[in-house]
Image (cartoon, rainbow, N blue to C red; front, side, top):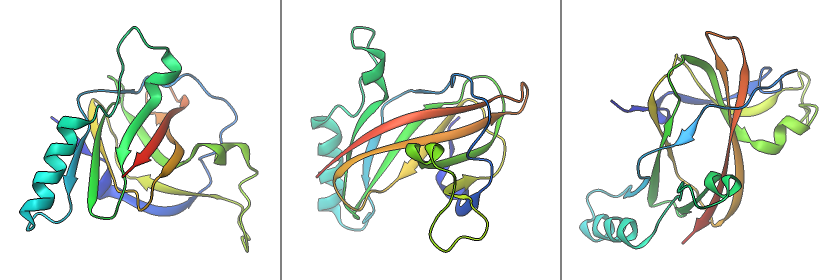
Amino acid sequence: MYRCLQPRGAFSRSTTYLQAGWVASPFAYTGTPICTSLHSDDLSTVADAAQWNVAHQVINVAANIPPSMQKVAFLRGGTQWQMTIPINFAGSNHDNVQLSFRDNVASAGDFLNSATGVIPVFSFSGTFTGVNNLIITFKQTGRYVLGLVHHNASSGNWSMFEMEFVIIP
């Protein structure tokens, strides 16, 4: 069964996105990401999204490509499209799941006019395990590197699942 991260995501300023120690993330892309139309009442955009899915390979996790390329996903940009990306959270329970730009972990957490010094994130409440869908819309094309930081509730370890998104029209 797939759970969705998107309905639980809320913008916040995180004090836990930066951690003192990290372990490798067990997360991995799984299944087939899909593009859907946000205008379900417009059959031409519904058909366009379905055709886009047939014409584009969003991710490639085949064993014959380098591991560094297995984090790259080619997604459709524009406010009329929604991308659903299945991510396998593995067998452990993960909480404190947060999405932000990857490079934010290299900052001190300071931002303009901040008195608290925390990182802007989308935070997902609850405990997650197994396959979950990241549902996301990108307003414009470009290349974005995001990090899905998570806490393993069993081991206490913190990890980041790095995702490089190439947004195309």
